[in-house]
Length: 292
Ligand SMILES: Cc1cc2nc3c(=O)[nH]c(=O)nc-3n(C[C@H](O)[C@H](O)[C@H](O)COP(=O)(O)OP(=O)(O)OC[C@H]3O[C@@H](n4cnc5c(N)ncnc54)[C@H](O)[C@@H]3O)c2cc1C
Image 1: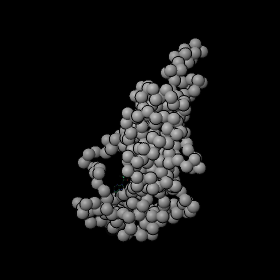
Image 2: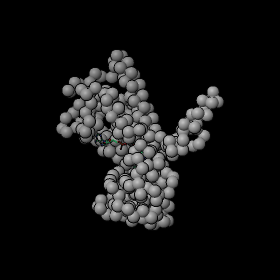
Image 3: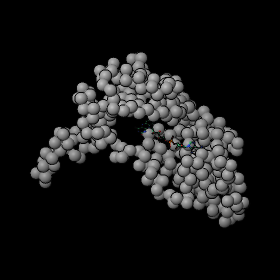
Image 4: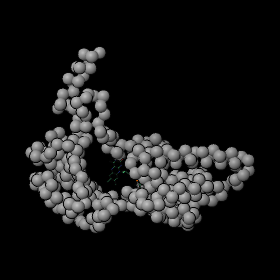
């Protein structure tokens, strides 16, 4: 067994070892975890689980209203009735959807603040990559007076996401102190990032591509009073059978937190519906009118 282990370790030569893996061997997991072909694969997998006849994507909802133990969902002038609804939009949009019927919940939700950010991906050739330091990237303290807040060396962090031998840098800008950056034109953002990368990394090569992604009001901020606010939100929602909220606004920003939030929302609605079915069977909830 020791020989097999030794061979396995030998097989993991330094060039085969991923940057997140230590010399301790293959049992060590990378510091970073993601989906091999990008986060979109998770959304695609989830969508594929729902029969086509039962899903409507790219259909912005205008309002969600409780009525006679059901939930009316309005979209593009059409109203459809559901037993349960999970609202997984950012909190300020959930506030708008619920405003007309549950104003107290809406006013709690709209107090949850968000920050905006921009990511800029820049690809470089082998020569430029050779000039870069090793590591996974860097953070920039506010006191440095730069607009780049952080930069990830994607070619080291997730090697399969960059062409072999090339460099892929992903810079983060914006955040709570620099939301105005979203007002700049793409050309200005690209020029700022390239200038600052030259100052920080000494990289002046022409990137083979620059891609800019804007994330307006995407990151919930847990400001003072957040816990109390979320407790009040939970209290109101718990008294609304068939309704649940999910997303990064409540109990964690990261993807694992959002997955947990979604699972909890689904559990709440399923539990409510089981209770509701029992209540209807006992005549406690009036049957709703058909609308479809
Ligand atoms: C730049 C950036 C980098 C990040 N990096 C990481 C990371 O490395 N690791 C990590 O764990 N987390 C990361 N996060 C955090 C994480 O990605 C987010 O917190 C998470 O994706 C938020 O998920 P969500 O479902 O709450 O919101 P969203 O993903 O914003 O989903 C909200 C959905 O609501 C929909 N919607 C809005 N209005 C309506 C409407 N009227 N009707 C119907 N649908 C509507 C939108 O189309 C959208 O699909 C990052 C976030 C950002 C912005």
